[in-house]
Image (tube, rainbow, N blue to C red; front, side, top):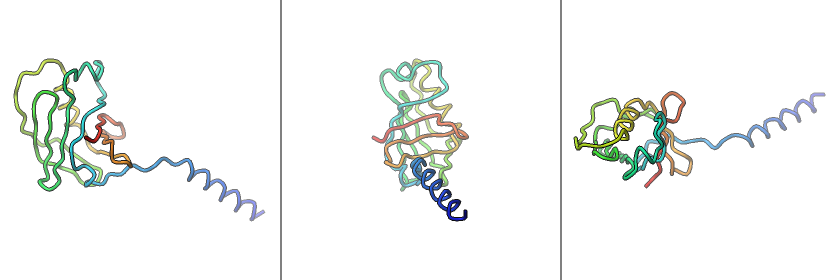
Length: 142
């Protein structure tokens, strides 16, 4: 009887390990470089309608501990605040003030300020910005 229970336990563990999802890294060094937004949630307007001409980008410079980019219209820059998989954009950033039509810029900047963590895919090609446990923004490595 003990052998059967032992074999069933091994069999169950094997099935469980085969069905696990590949882990997502949160290695800060993987943030380095430029990322282009390809998904944002929370808008009633389709992504291509929000950003018809130019998609937002974000660039991380780990040596300077800074973040910068374009919100599809204006440029922004500020200090990088991250610790493990936690990240914050709550500190004020410098932002240019050109006139921008549409809601894309406002949605991008307001969502960015709410982000509290991130994850990077195992192949390091996808960056997810997360609030709680919900992916709010997705970027692709450029």
